[in-house]
Length: 470
Ligand code: CO
Image (cartoon, rainbow, N blue to C red; front, side, top):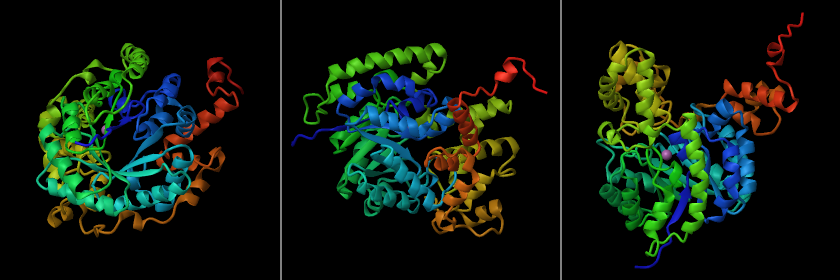
C-alpha cells in the first residue's frame, strides 16, 4: 500500500473546551502555548466559530475578532479553522446574503483559513452562499478552504446512500473538502468503515472525520475511517480529550506512528504541550469549570440518539420546571417530535428546537403549546427538512400559513446597512456590525464594557464608593 500521511485538525482551542467546559477557555489561557502549537505541523488549528463567539462577548468579556487576530499573530505557520453554521452564521436565525458574505470576508481578513460550514438540515441550498463567499476569499489568501460538514444522524432515511448523495451535492457545490460531522457520537467503528468507503468512492475531494468520544468509540471510528481512506481527523490534546470531547491527539499520533498512515508529528513536542494543558485541566477542575463527570464514557447517546449536550439541556429545562422526573418521557418524545418535523439531524439549532418541543409536549400535552421556532421549522423557514413534513401535521401547527419551499434567505432583504445604522455609537472596527448582527441583545452590553475599559471608566465605581451624586 502507498504511504499516506494522515492530517490532523487540533481542536483544543475550540470544540474540546466547548464540549467540556462550556467554551470558557479565555485567550489568556491559550496565549502561552500558541507558539508551540504552531510548531507541531497540524493540518489546522480549530480555534474560532461555534460557540466561541457567543462565549467571548457574553461571559469572557473578550472581543472575538481580537482573539482571532492574536491567535493569527502567534500561529503564523498553521491554518486556522472555524466552525460556521452556513446561513445562520454563528447566530440562531437566517441572515441575508450581504451579511454572510461580509462575515466570511472579515473572518478571512482577520486570519481564518479553513471555514467548516454546515447546515442543521443538510439542506445544500443553505450552504451555497457560504461556499461561494469562502471561495471568493481565496483571492485574498490562497490557503482558504471551504469545507462542508454533513451533519451525521440516524433514522430511516439516513442510509449510506443518503450521505453519498449529499457528498456528491457538496462536491458539485464547489466545496474543497468534506467533513463527516458526528456531533452526537453516534458512529460505530464498522459502520464508519462502510460510510467512509462509500463516500471516498463517490467524491474526489478530501474527507475528514469529526466525532466525539462520548460513547467511547471515537478512536476506533477514526482508525476504521483511516483504513477506509479518510484523509484527515479531528483530535484534541489529551488533557481536554475523551468524555464529550474528542479522541486524544497523542494517542492517535502514536497509533499511526511507523505505519503507512504516520502523521509525522513529534510525540515529544506534543508531550511538552500536554504538560501545559494538564495545568489548565487541573485549574478548571479546581474551579469547578470542568466537571470530571464530563470525562466519563456514556453510551446513553447511542441509546437515545441525542447529543450529550442536548441531554444536559433537557435535564436543566425540566429541573427549572420542577419536573426532573419526566426525563425518560421527554427522551421518548424526542424521536416522535423529530419524525413529525421531518427528521432534522439534532445539532444547533434544531437540537434546541426539537428538545424544547418535546419538553412542551410532555408538560402541556401534544402540540398544545408550540414554540415559534418549532412553527418556523415546520413551515420550512430553516430550509428543506430531510423528509417532507406531512401536510396535515403542518396545517395543525401553522394553520393556513403558506410553507416556505425556496431557499429561506431568498426572502430576506439586504440588511448590513440597516444593522450598521442601528449602532453607530458602538462601532470601533468594521467587524462590530457582525458581532451585533449575531447577538443583538448581548453585543451592546459588550460594546459598552469594552468602551468603559478603554477610557478607564468603572461603571460601578460610584456605587462601590457610596457616591450618590445629586
Ligand atoms: Co463537535
